Image (cartoon, rainbow, N blue to C red):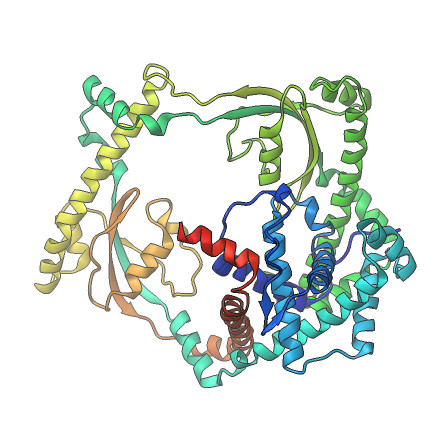
Length: 557
């Protein structure tokens, strides 16, 4: 039996990262339809490195990308409703470009390296430590998709080649000297001592005058903001991964789970989970991931069985969900009306929202749907409950909300005027020798001392919701010591930060952390070097391909 594949190689993720960057930077996000057959037309497939791309080369690359995608996602790309045919063709061309570039540079893979890659994949597919045979893999995975053992062999060979290409092209990024790494470390980790004064809207609410006429005018001015979009309400049955964790752990306990965890640890390395400070902690994370993966697979299997029973009831009605659920002792829940952001009751996905809004009285059921997309935790089967068209509530229906919005907007404007007026007065007070704190107190403001922080600091809870930390960090590190920043506007009002001093660097911590920091910095630079090359190469080499020409034409409109 073919199990859920384990993510089995660092470079696999690296290639994914590279392709993702190109898809954002180079290909853009022009809309396309799945049923349009892509953008390959009578004009051919374009050229690559001076040679015309043949239909066979394109189909070979398509087969390879299908395998690549399946290994990464445990599903075929055409099963993803968010992956359009044009997007698929873009990735196929990128894969062709990578293999052709490797060939031009004389990069090759030995038969043993390709065979080892194939064996690694087949081993990762097995359960109980057993390798899936190539015959089983071909029969259950490849043949139903029209792929062959030759396609798999070519895929393994080319992936090894692409791995070597990435390492070669990213090599320049690793050439960072210890001195340069130390300088970057010091810049990112030197802390500052700073004070801040906030001009928060909540402190100025008492100055806002509310009249019926003002509320009515505000409602009229911001009418569009109160429009409710199209909404939908669905009944759903949830198959939560958490309900299958014990079962999954028991199943995995009968296998070579420890060996799987050790293999994951060796492949991905100790830094894969940044919060794991020891090898034991990292392995515990890998063990948890394997259990979660099995639990989700079990939840999906149960959801699939339930969905099959629901869809088999004739005629096809939304009520079938509740009927079958009652027979099986399952709970049906109802969402509140939701828009494109999805239900408030749980973290859904784009696929869930798309499926919900596609429901009709003639086609009222959907699922199983795995949610969310990034870190799946549950599977859902849904039925249409109600569709609600877009509307604008009357002022009487939402008067309290409009009044609160009006008071907040007016208070924010008052707060920002106060901050703007205080900034030059503060600068004069500091030049006259007064302290930041005394100048604030004299103006009836309350200064605060911030905890010491550096550019590498990720968060500052003390800010609460009064300002975003990146904005405070930017204002702080662009202000000289002994000076105050200008007034910085925020959604809540604004702030002024005063930089007291740059604090001495902790040399002992730097000595202890620098080797690991240098290694991480080099890996990051390697990735940047490869992605930079990929961006430039794709723009140059793929300029004659149909999908590039379509994007260029769309961008010119």
